Length: 353
Image 1 (tube, rainbow, N blue to C red):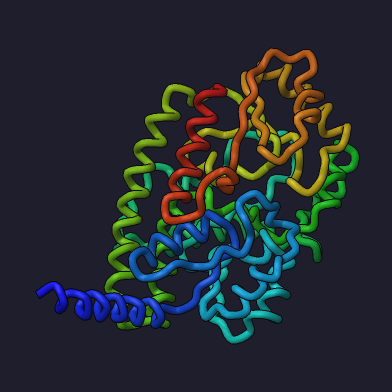
Image 2 (spheres, helix red, strand yellow):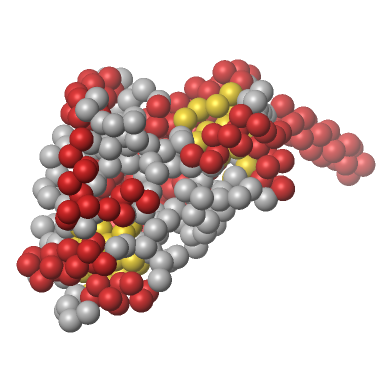
């Protein structure tokens, strides 16, 4: 009897390996996207992560192993050129035969325009995320058109670089560091919207199912379970943030407006325009003045930034400091990372405030 168990075990192993081999080779750009794809593929296979969590996605040079993963991929999921403009050329060169999905262009995804100023005023965007019910039958197009009416009308007035017409005045107000940061039309940190996470799970399941129809049921089932998990996460984050709503804080890098808008917790300003440039002296002066005017109680940095800049901004101010990590630099890549990133943002904000 025991002799029969060996070939049965080997056969089962071979069948599992064959099923795994039939799953498409998939690549994802950053750890939060990789996490969503991993969740949809859970039990079937694992995607390749192109940009390590601790790296700056705006500027990155591929290692040979990452270039090879991109080259061998059949499906590629990425935020889009607004976040990683360099990756567009890499995809065209290395993954020309793959099916490419820029997630910011998926129907139903929320997109927000860049904030040009160092100081933020009250949000004027529709509350596209807060208390949103992620029902599969919800019509995302109405919400998208609402944002298109709000964002793209202004965008039509932009110059060839995607800046609004009044950006010429920025140099007179200390905003000239925007010119050092080439960017697209929209703020690319869109994974920090829970609604986008939910919309993207559906899109990822659909693309995987097209490439691998035999396992479509698993992909869609995983996506549905993941959306329920995000609904639970929304409730958890609201409970974390409820005690500190209405308090003022400053972020180091303007990367959080999707999260701010999702959970009705607006920042008062950002020290740095991007994670690729240091803030100008004029911008630091503006932030220092805002801290004094509003009695800012919290200034938040990020793991990769020079703490001396935060110290300069905080000079003479009585405010707490904390650290936000929008990509999960210290987290293990995988299906749980996405939820952990957003939960950790909420906890860091609540602790600092």
